[in-house]
Image (cartoon, rainbow, N blue to C red):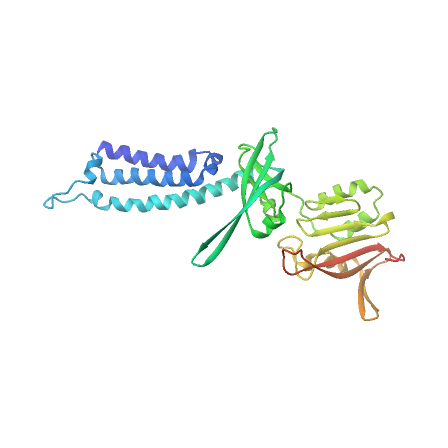
Length: 334
Protein backbone atom coordinates (compact mmCIF):
# COMPACT_ATOMS: atom_id res chain seq x y z
CA UNK A 1 0.00 0.00 0.00
CA UNK A 2 1.36 3.39 -1.00
CA UNK A 3 1.97 6.16 1.52
CA UNK A 4 -0.59 8.33 -0.26
CA UNK A 5 -3.28 5.68 0.16
CA UNK A 6 -2.41 5.32 3.85
CA UNK A 7 -2.80 9.09 4.27
CA UNK A 8 -6.21 9.12 2.56
CA UNK A 9 -7.39 6.18 4.69
CA UNK A 10 -6.35 8.17 7.75
CA UNK A 11 -8.23 11.21 6.43
CA UNK A 12 -11.33 9.04 5.90
CA UNK A 13 -11.16 7.84 9.49
CA UNK A 14 -10.67 11.41 10.73
CA UNK A 15 -13.75 12.60 8.77
CA UNK A 16 -15.87 9.93 10.47
CA UNK A 17 -14.56 10.79 13.95
CA UNK A 18 -14.78 14.54 13.38
CA UNK A 19 -18.40 14.61 12.25
CA UNK A 20 -19.65 11.91 14.61
CA UNK A 21 -17.84 12.87 17.81
CA UNK A 22 -15.74 16.04 17.69
CA UNK A 23 -18.26 18.62 16.44
CA UNK A 24 -20.17 19.89 19.51
CA UNK A 25 -23.84 18.95 19.45
CA UNK A 26 -24.99 22.58 19.71
CA UNK A 27 -22.80 23.66 16.77
CA UNK A 28 -24.12 20.84 14.58
CA UNK A 29 -27.71 21.60 15.61
CA UNK A 30 -27.32 25.20 14.40
CA UNK A 31 -26.48 24.05 10.83
CA UNK A 32 -27.58 20.41 10.50
CA UNK A 33 -27.99 20.31 6.71
CA UNK A 34 -24.71 22.16 6.09
CA UNK A 35 -22.70 19.75 8.25
CA UNK A 36 -24.63 16.78 6.90
CA UNK A 37 -23.83 17.52 3.26
CA UNK A 38 -20.28 18.62 4.07
CA UNK A 39 -19.62 15.37 5.91
CA UNK A 40 -21.04 13.31 3.05
CA UNK A 41 -18.97 15.13 0.42
CA UNK A 42 -15.71 14.88 2.39
CA UNK A 43 -16.28 11.19 3.09
CA UNK A 44 -16.87 10.55 -0.62
CA UNK A 45 -13.71 12.41 -1.64
CA UNK A 46 -11.43 10.81 0.96
CA UNK A 47 -12.86 7.32 0.47
CA UNK A 48 -12.69 7.59 -3.33
CA UNK A 49 -9.05 8.67 -3.17
CA UNK A 50 -8.21 5.93 -0.66
CA UNK A 51 -9.73 3.34 -3.02
CA UNK A 52 -8.52 4.71 -6.39
CA UNK A 53 -5.18 6.22 -5.29
CA UNK A 54 -5.06 8.91 -8.01
CA UNK A 55 -1.74 10.70 -8.50
CA UNK A 56 -3.54 13.89 -9.55
CA UNK A 57 -7.01 15.15 -10.41
CA UNK A 58 -6.14 14.99 -14.13
CA UNK A 59 -6.18 11.21 -14.01
CA UNK A 60 -9.97 11.41 -13.63
CA UNK A 61 -10.23 12.65 -17.22
CA UNK A 62 -7.46 10.65 -18.87
CA UNK A 63 -8.39 7.97 -21.40
CA UNK A 64 -7.01 4.66 -20.29
CA UNK A 65 -5.06 2.43 -22.64
CA UNK A 66 -7.40 -0.46 -23.45
CA UNK A 67 -4.39 -2.74 -23.63
CA UNK A 68 -3.52 -1.98 -19.99
CA UNK A 69 -5.57 -3.55 -17.16
CA UNK A 70 -7.53 -1.03 -15.09
CA UNK A 71 -6.73 -1.18 -11.36
CA UNK A 72 -9.61 -2.58 -9.32
CA UNK A 73 -9.71 0.50 -7.08
CA UNK A 74 -10.30 2.78 -10.04
CA UNK A 75 -13.05 0.54 -11.33
CA UNK A 76 -15.05 0.70 -8.13
CA UNK A 77 -14.30 4.23 -6.91
CA UNK A 78 -17.49 5.75 -8.49
CA UNK A 79 -19.52 3.60 -6.10
CA UNK A 80 -17.94 5.34 -3.10
CA UNK A 81 -20.55 8.05 -3.57
CA UNK A 82 -23.05 5.63 -2.00
CA UNK A 83 -21.38 5.67 1.45
CA UNK A 84 -21.19 9.46 1.16
CA UNK A 85 -24.96 9.74 0.58
CA UNK A 86 -25.70 7.29 3.38
CA UNK A 87 -23.42 9.25 5.70
CA UNK A 88 -25.53 12.39 5.19
CA UNK A 89 -28.63 10.64 6.54
CA UNK A 90 -26.67 8.92 9.30
CA UNK A 91 -25.31 12.26 10.48
CA UNK A 92 -28.71 13.94 10.62
CA UNK A 93 -30.33 11.04 12.50
CA UNK A 94 -27.36 10.47 14.81
CA UNK A 95 -27.02 14.14 15.72
CA UNK A 96 -30.75 14.33 16.44
CA UNK A 97 -30.30 11.50 18.95
CA UNK A 98 -27.25 13.29 20.39
CA UNK A 99 -29.41 16.33 21.04
CA UNK A 100 -32.02 14.28 22.86
CA UNK A 101 -29.39 12.53 24.97
CA UNK A 102 -27.77 15.89 25.79
CA UNK A 103 -31.08 17.32 27.00
CA UNK A 104 -31.94 14.18 28.96
CA UNK A 105 -28.62 14.20 30.83
CA UNK A 106 -27.99 17.94 31.15
CA UNK A 107 -31.50 19.37 30.64
CA UNK A 108 -32.70 22.38 32.60
CA UNK A 109 -36.39 23.30 32.65
CA UNK A 110 -37.45 26.91 32.16
CA UNK A 111 -40.27 28.92 30.65
CA UNK A 112 -40.11 30.38 27.18
CA UNK A 113 -42.33 32.94 25.47
CA UNK A 114 -43.76 32.62 21.98
CA UNK A 115 -42.70 35.72 20.05
CA UNK A 116 -43.73 34.76 16.53
CA UNK A 117 -44.87 31.94 14.31
CA UNK A 118 -45.49 31.03 10.71
CA UNK A 119 -47.04 28.38 8.51
CA UNK A 120 -45.82 27.29 5.10
CA UNK A 121 -47.97 25.41 2.60
CA UNK A 122 -46.43 23.51 -0.30
CA UNK A 123 -48.26 21.74 -3.10
CA UNK A 124 -46.95 18.69 -4.90
CA UNK A 125 -48.91 16.48 -7.24
CA UNK A 126 -52.10 18.31 -6.29
CA UNK A 127 -51.56 17.55 -2.60
CA UNK A 128 -50.99 20.32 -0.09
CA UNK A 129 -48.75 20.01 2.94
CA UNK A 130 -48.53 22.64 5.66
CA UNK A 131 -45.69 22.95 8.16
CA UNK A 132 -45.89 25.10 11.28
CA UNK A 133 -43.10 26.89 13.07
CA UNK A 134 -42.93 28.84 16.34
CA UNK A 135 -40.19 31.21 17.45
CA UNK A 136 -39.67 30.93 21.20
CA UNK A 137 -37.38 33.06 23.36
CA UNK A 138 -36.06 32.00 26.76
CA UNK A 139 -33.41 32.98 29.30
CA UNK A 140 -30.83 30.56 30.68
CA UNK A 141 -29.70 30.48 34.31
CA UNK A 142 -27.06 33.15 33.60
CA UNK A 143 -29.73 35.52 32.25
CA UNK A 144 -28.67 35.23 28.61
CA UNK A 145 -31.50 35.27 26.09
CA UNK A 146 -31.81 32.67 23.34
CA UNK A 147 -34.22 32.06 20.46
CA UNK A 148 -35.25 28.71 19.03
CA UNK A 149 -37.33 27.79 15.99
CA UNK A 150 -39.63 24.94 16.90
CA UNK A 151 -41.61 22.81 14.47
CA UNK A 152 -45.09 22.04 15.84
CA UNK A 153 -48.23 20.35 14.62
CA UNK A 154 -51.37 22.18 13.53
CA UNK A 155 -53.18 21.84 16.86
CA UNK A 156 -50.22 23.19 18.83
CA UNK A 157 -49.86 26.05 16.36
CA UNK A 158 -53.53 27.03 16.72
CA UNK A 159 -53.31 26.91 20.50
CA UNK A 160 -50.24 29.15 20.56
CA UNK A 161 -50.37 32.93 20.59
CA UNK A 162 -47.88 35.76 20.87
CA UNK A 163 -46.82 36.07 24.48
CA UNK A 164 -47.90 32.55 25.43
CA UNK A 165 -45.62 30.75 27.87
CA UNK A 166 -44.26 27.36 26.91
CA UNK A 167 -41.96 24.85 28.60
CA UNK A 168 -38.38 24.86 27.33
CA UNK A 169 -35.67 22.35 28.19
CA UNK A 170 -32.15 23.60 27.46
CA UNK A 171 -28.73 22.08 28.03
CA UNK A 172 -26.77 23.36 31.02
CA UNK A 173 -23.56 22.69 29.06
CA UNK A 174 -24.78 24.33 25.84
CA UNK A 175 -27.55 26.82 26.81
CA UNK A 176 -28.33 27.63 23.16
CA UNK A 177 -29.33 23.99 22.61
CA UNK A 178 -32.99 23.69 23.55
CA UNK A 179 -36.35 22.14 22.81
CA UNK A 180 -39.76 23.77 23.31
CA UNK A 181 -42.21 21.18 24.62
CA UNK A 182 -45.99 21.28 24.88
CA UNK A 183 -46.69 17.66 25.83
CA UNK A 184 -46.41 16.48 29.43
CA UNK A 185 -45.32 13.00 28.36
CA UNK A 186 -42.61 14.47 26.12
CA UNK A 187 -41.45 16.77 28.92
CA UNK A 188 -41.19 13.81 31.31
CA UNK A 189 -38.56 12.26 28.99
CA UNK A 190 -36.19 15.17 29.62
CA UNK A 191 -36.76 16.14 33.23
CA UNK A 192 -38.37 14.69 36.33
CA UNK A 193 -41.80 16.20 36.95
CA UNK A 194 -44.63 15.21 39.31
CA UNK A 195 -46.90 12.83 37.44
CA UNK A 196 -49.43 11.45 39.96
CA UNK A 197 -53.14 11.11 39.25
CA UNK A 198 -55.63 13.20 41.20
CA UNK A 199 -57.63 11.00 43.56
CA UNK A 200 -60.43 11.56 46.04
CA UNK A 201 -58.00 11.92 48.97
CA UNK A 202 -56.39 14.88 47.22
CA UNK A 203 -59.76 16.56 46.65
CA UNK A 204 -60.79 16.02 50.29
CA UNK A 205 -57.50 17.55 51.43
CA UNK A 206 -58.37 20.63 49.35
CA UNK A 207 -61.93 20.67 50.71
CA UNK A 208 -60.65 20.62 54.30
CA UNK A 209 -57.78 23.02 53.67
CA UNK A 210 -57.76 26.18 55.77
CA UNK A 211 -55.07 27.89 53.70
CA UNK A 212 -56.17 28.64 50.16
CA UNK A 213 -52.76 30.06 49.24
CA UNK A 214 -51.16 26.62 49.55
CA UNK A 215 -53.51 24.75 47.21
CA UNK A 216 -51.73 25.53 43.93
CA UNK A 217 -48.40 24.45 45.45
CA UNK A 218 -50.02 21.27 46.73
CA UNK A 219 -51.46 20.47 43.30
CA UNK A 220 -48.08 21.02 41.66
CA UNK A 221 -46.54 18.41 43.96
CA UNK A 222 -49.05 15.93 42.49
CA UNK A 223 -48.73 16.64 38.78
CA UNK A 224 -47.33 19.30 36.48
CA UNK A 225 -48.51 22.11 36.04
CA UNK A 226 -51.33 23.97 37.81
CA UNK A 227 -52.13 27.67 37.79
CA UNK A 228 -54.68 29.65 39.79
CA UNK A 229 -57.27 32.12 38.54
CA UNK A 230 -59.36 33.36 41.45
CA UNK A 231 -60.94 30.21 42.95
CA UNK A 232 -60.33 28.03 39.87
CA UNK A 233 -57.21 25.92 39.41
CA UNK A 234 -56.43 24.69 35.90
CA UNK A 235 -53.96 22.28 34.37
CA UNK A 236 -54.26 22.92 30.63
CA UNK A 237 -51.64 20.34 29.67
CA UNK A 238 -53.72 17.56 31.21
CA UNK A 239 -57.19 19.00 30.59
CA UNK A 240 -57.95 19.21 34.34
CA UNK A 241 -59.68 21.87 36.44
CA UNK A 242 -60.63 22.30 40.11
CA UNK A 243 -62.95 24.90 41.61
CA UNK A 244 -63.12 25.61 45.34
CA UNK A 245 -66.45 27.12 46.35
CA UNK A 246 -66.74 29.88 48.99
CA UNK A 247 -66.37 28.67 52.53
CA UNK A 248 -64.90 25.38 51.30
CA UNK A 249 -68.45 24.09 51.02
CA UNK A 250 -67.67 22.13 47.87
CA UNK A 251 -64.87 21.19 45.49
CA UNK A 252 -65.60 20.54 41.81
CA UNK A 253 -63.14 18.50 39.76
CA UNK A 254 -63.16 18.24 35.95
CA UNK A 255 -61.29 15.61 33.95
CA UNK A 256 -61.58 14.34 30.35
CA UNK A 257 -64.35 11.78 29.96
CA UNK A 258 -65.63 8.98 27.73
CA UNK A 259 -62.30 7.26 27.24
CA UNK A 260 -60.39 10.49 26.66
CA UNK A 261 -57.23 11.02 28.62
CA UNK A 262 -55.93 13.53 31.12
CA UNK A 263 -52.40 12.52 30.17
CA UNK A 264 -51.38 10.41 27.23
CA UNK A 265 -51.55 6.77 28.28
CA UNK A 266 -53.86 7.39 31.29
CA UNK A 267 -57.20 5.88 30.33
CA UNK A 268 -60.42 7.09 31.81
CA UNK A 269 -60.70 3.82 33.78
CA UNK A 270 -57.63 4.97 35.71
CA UNK A 271 -59.21 8.32 36.65
CA UNK A 272 -60.87 9.53 39.82
CA UNK A 273 -63.84 7.14 39.73
CA UNK A 274 -61.68 4.00 39.62
CA UNK A 275 -60.30 4.67 43.10
CA UNK A 276 -63.58 5.32 44.89
CA UNK A 277 -64.71 1.72 45.44
CA UNK A 278 -61.29 0.68 46.73
CA UNK A 279 -61.51 3.45 49.32
CA UNK A 280 -64.82 2.20 50.69
CA UNK A 281 -67.23 4.54 48.89
CA UNK A 282 -70.65 3.14 48.13
CA UNK A 283 -72.53 3.92 44.93
CA UNK A 284 -76.15 4.90 44.46
CA UNK A 285 -78.35 6.35 41.72
CA UNK A 286 -81.06 8.97 42.26
CA UNK A 287 -83.75 9.58 39.64
CA UNK A 288 -85.02 13.11 39.21
CA UNK A 289 -87.69 13.18 36.51
CA UNK A 290 -86.12 11.83 33.35
CA UNK A 291 -82.58 12.25 34.67
CA UNK A 292 -80.55 9.83 36.76
CA UNK A 293 -77.73 11.09 38.96
CA UNK A 294 -74.97 8.87 40.29
CA UNK A 295 -73.39 9.41 43.69
CA UNK A 296 -70.58 7.87 45.70
CA UNK A 297 -70.69 8.32 49.46
CA UNK A 298 -69.43 7.29 52.87
CA UNK A 299 -70.11 8.58 56.38
CA UNK A 300 -68.24 11.87 55.82
CA UNK A 301 -68.29 12.77 52.12
CA UNK A 302 -70.44 12.53 49.02
CA UNK A 303 -69.25 12.70 45.41
CA UNK A 304 -71.63 13.40 42.56
CA UNK A 305 -70.81 12.63 38.94
CA UNK A 306 -72.03 14.44 35.85
CA UNK A 307 -71.15 14.29 32.17
CA UNK A 308 -70.64 17.67 30.50
CA UNK A 309 -70.28 18.37 26.79
CA UNK A 310 -69.22 21.64 25.23
CA UNK A 311 -68.35 22.70 21.69
CA UNK A 312 -64.87 23.71 20.62
CA UNK A 313 -64.08 27.17 19.37
CA UNK A 314 -64.93 28.26 15.84
CA UNK A 315 -61.59 27.02 14.47
CA UNK A 316 -62.09 23.45 15.66
CA UNK A 317 -64.63 20.74 14.93
CA UNK A 318 -66.30 18.47 17.46
CA UNK A 319 -67.24 18.40 21.12
CA UNK A 320 -65.27 18.39 24.34
CA UNK A 321 -66.53 15.72 26.74
CA UNK A 322 -65.67 15.98 30.43
CA UNK A 323 -66.59 14.32 33.70
CA UNK A 324 -67.44 16.71 36.54
CA UNK A 325 -67.13 15.42 40.10
CA UNK A 326 -68.49 17.49 42.98
CA UNK A 327 -67.17 16.68 46.45
CA UNK A 328 -69.02 17.88 49.56
CA UNK A 329 -69.56 16.79 53.12
CA UNK A 330 -72.31 14.22 53.66
CA UNK A 331 -75.47 15.84 54.98
CA UNK A 332 -74.76 19.10 53.16
CA UNK A 333 -76.60 20.02 49.97
CA UNK A 334 -74.39 20.00 46.88
